[in-house]
Length: 266
Ligand SMILES: Nc1ncnc2c1ncn2[C@@H]1O[C@H](COP(=O)(O)OP(=O)(O)OP(=O)(O)O)[C@@H](O)[C@H]1O
Image (cartoon, rainbow, N blue to C red):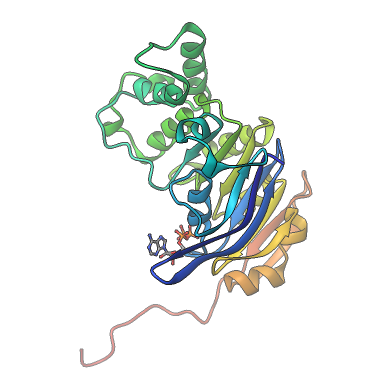
């Protein structure tokens, strides 16, 4: 087990955001974290990439409590793409991607030839090689997201922690990214809102609701109409994907929801 969340709880200002979360991620698996807004997905991931310390419980990497490792050592093995990833500094795309090597570099050593090849390969894979000399400040949301993903890949981590990596990406780049993650043999813990993408890419899906784990299993085990109704409050019909057999959710629109109109006399 490469990554193991053992009864992780997070309390902030007297409120329990995560309640005794137990989650295992095996080497080479893609594990999806899904749940409604505010259910605690980002909070759980923050404990893994160490932006937060659990109030109780522990996150183990290869059996070692992450809290006992230097930040630099854990950054060598865990790379994160987060909701808080900033790109508000005037770096070029090439420079920002190269920063992914920072945890592996002592002092001001320049990237060696192998590392430069790695950066070029990541930029090619993420379809941003043509943007290499552009300032990241001038990029579109999807281009910026792809730069941050490339930076995480050149870190060559043992575990990738991705918080909504498909944000801003058009459908082709979403499919390319998730196909890459699925085929890469990388160990990935990824928060996703799109349940159909989660079903297509994840070996396992863990479902959070109000800070608690309410289901954990294969997509077919977890994504049932009952669970989707109970956790997300929407009705779905579930069919098997004709090529892969993965569950696909067909959502029912709610005909009782009507537009908001101003009340008379206001
Ligand atoms: N620093 C904080 N202080 C107080 N409350 C917080 C803090 N960080 C998160 N929360 C609250 O904890 C809950 C879980 O937030 P979190 O961002 O983990 O949810 P999420 O499942 O990632 O949501 P979303 O799908 O909207 O991104 C939310 O109600 C949020 O308002």
